Image (cartoon, rainbow over all chains, first blue to last red; front, side, top):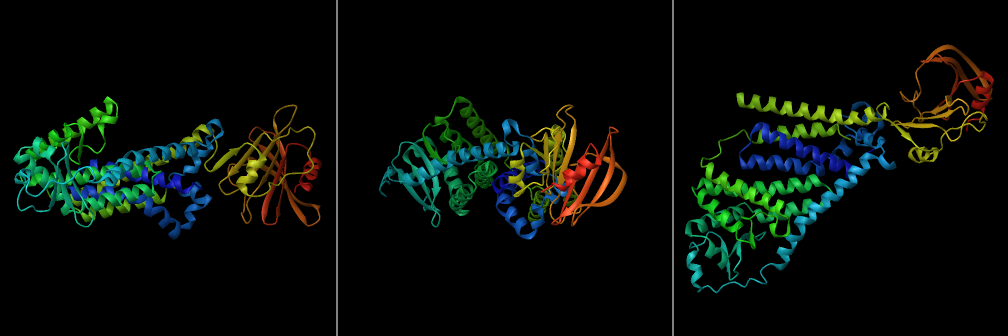
Amino acid sequence: MFPPAGLAILHGCIAAAFVEGLLRVWRVRAPAQRLALRFAALLAPFVLPPAFAALAPFRSTAAFATDAALFAGAHWDTLTPGGVGAATIATAALAATGVALFLRDAIPFLADRVRGDRHDPPLPPDHPAWTRLPAPPAIAVRLTAAADAVLYCSGIDRPAVTVSLGTLVRLDDDELAAALQHEIEHARRRDPALGWLLMLLRALQAFNPATQIVGRQIVQEVEHRADRAVADLGMGPALARAIAKVSGSGATRSDLADPSTPARFASAARRAVSNAVLARCEGLLADTQSVPDEPGPARVALAALAISLLLFFVV
Amino acid sequence: MYAGLRSTASLLAVFVVAAAVLRVLDAVPRAVTGLPRGIVRVRSLDEAGRRLNGRIAMPVYFPAELEWPPSDIMLADDLSVAVTCRERRTGRGRLIVASGPRGAGAIAAGLLPPATRLQSAETTVVPGRPLTVDRLQDATGAFWHQASWRDDGRLIIVRHRGGMDELLRIAASVR
């Protein structure tokens, strides 16, 4: 029988690829539905292996692997390059990749939370910069003296937006309003709590590269959802300009810039980040209409059922 | 309703493609190794014993003309095992000892080379161990003798390319 870690990786990879295929074939545009499908892929390796083990223990028998399974990971261990099973080698390599992907995001995530606001003291309420912010604010706002472009939403139970003087200097009034609206959307949806949940799930399967990649994709979908909400208010172009300015301003702490930090990576990675920012801006500029209604929950349920059925025959 | 049908049809298409890809990927090791599905080749009796979590049934009496260690040891998913020993002089397979898991009706398909049964008889070499003895002809036309019996619920088969007396002596010594 294939070891549990290998099976989780296998299920995660297949579920992620299946959902990616569905998103393209169905041309899903509604952010809520895209998120739901991504979550189905993310949760598959957590839920299905123990559920199958409890409800269908016959799946672990040799007869099922030989006669009924679509794919049995253990069959790849019959190939033994260098005396080690190919499945074992692949599991080890993928697990190492998963851990690397997890640490790449977890370390900055935790470092940001640990550092918090210690080096960014808030400005006093009578500082003239406060006049740039909409009043009364729709959400608690914290204004700091940092010269970097800082703009993010944080707080699990009482979300608040942190913005710096550096951001106020870089953005004009329309861009600032759009950027703040983006953060307000995050607060309204409790996205900071979702961020912690995602990081917890990623930690629980740190060895699973599919979990890490899908987790990241969910973060991108969450950002897209907030972008979409701002675009629906007619502030899409202003938000696009704000994203371009914040992303191009070097040192920045904002979800408007790409989560990966380009400064520490090679130029190829920086180009990839630039392309991602460009695509995000173009999406905001081109798509000014609301996303049409798409058949939602039933389609997601059907997709989840299909994934479960497919993975039932993967051991 | 049309959109719903189209969505379902698309989902079905993605499902079928995914299932087909998985099936093809599962067949790759079989294609490379030439072994049937569910059968693996291991390098030693020790490794086979570890995987089976027990001792492999092997004869104590071992003809001098046979090579040791065995040339081929195969395990099936159902824990059947087949051990092949070659003749030292010719290099051809001469002795196959196979055993199945407790309670199984037969040795896993693919472990024993296909052969046509020509004759069959019952005999008892060791008291309390009734044997079925067969004369077989394999796909190359070579003749084999085969003894099979049940020991503690396990089916054990000894197939030997030689005389009946030698076969019965080997079979009687299997532990």
